Length: 317
Image (cartoon, rainbow, N blue to C red; front, side, top):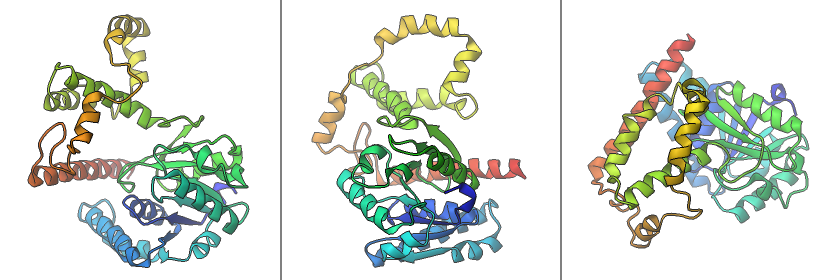
């Protein structure tokens, strides 16, 4: 299957990330199926897309006149065969459980046309393992969208052990056609690219709190008011080249020996989870959160992403 032949996409699952994934393709001219085993959850997924589009229109990111044409490209079904047989690209977004995903891939493998590409949106589970029990593994790989999928541009396209070059390249290209900024992960490794980087930072951030170097709020403030400001335009590899690899080497010779290197989770993190201190879910994690603070945090993130997308849209015009 070549990217230009992909006209219809099926999103399998109607959970948290699925509406944004479906919206992204529909906004860019693809016909989209959203499948859910329980039909009663499908109207909520469709309404979420409409709400997202309405919010974007209110910010001038899209024209209000485009909402209905986009919505008409979205169909729903609780019949897996209907979604699978009608689509040239599958985005699996079911529960983050290996057995459930393997079972879904096996079903899709039997239902889809042989040239249909089947991808998993899993953020951590190996696409090689997900495809392990299927027959036509050459057309299976990872396609990890970041939440909220209609606002964050990155999609990690992960090559599984048996993925063909044709399926890998077609998936990468169709993500570009869908308005995303895909990145190629050439090896199926835990965390792929971005989560490996993100959680390396999280490990050190938690270690700083655990070792009494700074409290949680200070760690976050140090990140947000220092290097995080330049990250959107200056990644760490380019930054290393900018300051000089000789200086980077000198810094690493001093700093790396003191940076957290334990292979497992922080004991402090394990203790908090054991005590039920889960963060926003429980109102207390590394910090204490009121309902008002939780709402404000979510709104701050959403508004920031909408502002970013607004700037990107205007620059393209």
